Image (tube, rainbow, N blue to C red; front, side, top):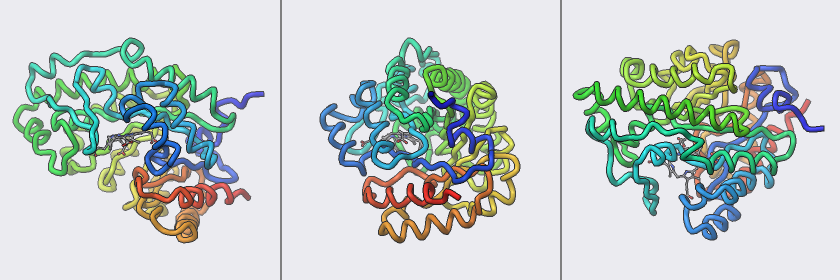
Length: 345
Ligand code: 1CP
């Protein structure tokens, strides 16, 4: 008999049920640290080609689960896919992803298409369906999207940046254009998440990676209203996990958004986060991804220390505090996953 979604460990942890052990998965678990990922990437001819092909995308989504038996698979895709679908030309080279023509004017915002994911991102739905068929019964499938602020920052900057100067300039000098962009993105993001749930995602992660670069007041004014709007549209549709990189100063706000879980980056002490928020949300995280550069025995020691700090409180999802480094030894990932699995009481 097939297991119902609500009985899968990850989904139970998102409801903060007491469990024999915490579920475990890793941000960017499908990735370059795995030789089998690099082989598929080479066969596909590149990152974008791999992502747009449901056969390749589901294969690399399944690879880490096959190797380590994580409790969840996260679809191999990227937060930049919806921007491409809205009409931005996306390139991927040795420097990573970029948009050669960034969005800087009201005319460019108006020209972005208000896409319907069924029409323009059909490969995502197909990859989700294929992945579900290939997953073990007990493994949950996670969908995701970038949050409006993080997508706006990529659209405005055209690439990753440390200063976000162009984004900040638009926010402060041309707020109506910025708001028009955010409104449009919020609609697309909500539809894209809903679409993924329809095609088999059992939980969704909203990655507001760059919102942590904003101070508290700016976060409330320029980011929170739109991520909240997206999250409200998903309420009752699927459990929602919200991640902000460097978001320790925003935790009160993230919890107040009403999500089922907040993903912590590694700089937040997880025990204290449980003391403060554990009766309201599940908490995901939060081993420093750099820790996985240590030997497997040191990884196990530090992961067990983290699990001791949580002390088996309900609602813990073991994960890293950000994406895994490509330099990570696959053995160290095994040590990390085993720590959760061996907690069984
Ligand atoms: O093979 C390669 O070189 C590609 C590296 C890579 C991978 C494996 C990129 C390019 N994206 C991905 C997949 C990816 N990205 C997933 C798949 C599922 C998983 O295994 O976790 C997810 C969830 C993402 C999300 C993502 N992409 C975020 C949000 C989460 C986070 O890490 O903060 C962000 C910011 C991106 C943008 C992006 N895509 C890729 C890179 C190298 C980057 C970062 C670029 C930058 O910082 O400017």
